[in-house]
Image (cartoon, rainbow, N blue to C red; front, side, top):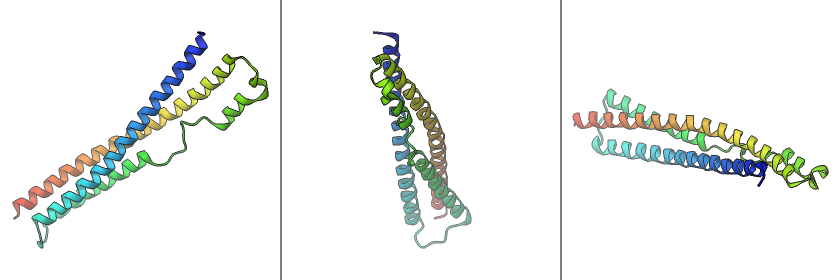
Length: 163
């Protein structure tokens, strides 16, 4: 096996790995959206059960509003992670046209592997950039979710204390 074949195989494996990482980040974003929405709904329903028909104090209202806002922004962060994107994991048509050009069509196998590997490296680079950006939004979303949970806990404690 030539060094080029080994390199092409390695690049292909790395591309598979980075795509799996991207899919994992996006799956975690979906769970962020789901849990933030669920916790916000359950928390506000619980608040309604604890204080039925009573006017909430300013502190309760402020912490509940801030909690709800944190959950909404956590959901937005999750949506930014899974938003439709220009697919960085697809090889550009212009790169594919190079491979099928007449002068390359009958060329040795190694030449095609090199052109394909070059295109895959570009895809790898773009996908890695996308993952890094998605990771930033995912971390922000989880931080907001934790803040929302803490504020919701404070709201519940204030409500229980004022019963």
